[in-house]
Structure formats: structure tokens, C-alpha cells
Length: 30
Image 1 (cartoon, rainbow, N blue to C red):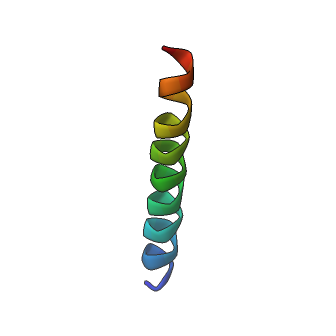
Image 2 (cartoon, rainbow, N blue to C red):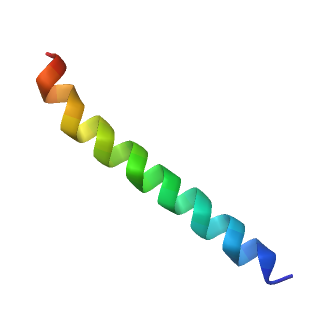
């Protein structure tokens, strides 16, 4: 079941990008 690691990696990467984008754009919006 090696694909579980791949799915977890993709989810973690997406979460990291979302947090980074939020941190970058939140100050500019307010």
C-alpha cells in the first residue's frame, strides 16, 4: 500500500501551499 504515502504527501504539499498563500495574501487584503 505504498500509494498511501503518495496521497499523504500530496495532501501535505497542498496544505503547505494553502497556508503559504493565505499567509502571503491575508496582510495584503486587510
